Image (cartoon, rainbow, N blue to C red; front, side):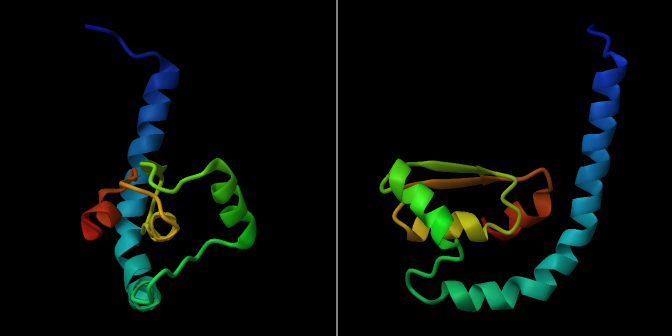
Length: 103
């Protein structure tokens, strides 16, 4: 059995506390913004990213590529990247609340 050092224990405790906090607040976050974002994304091709972000994504060439988004929260950026032409898109978040909503 491998014994964890103090830094690993502290990191694990921080991560667990952070996840619990996001799981607690996420339903409120979703309630406040979900309908607004749903309405935006019902518009074909809607993108919430600014011109600078779009420019970077265009330069690196995301069309047809698979994309993984870490800390995706409610997924609006990932949905925008999909609308810009990305292939398969996968969102990962510490909190399981937002990712369960967008399955």
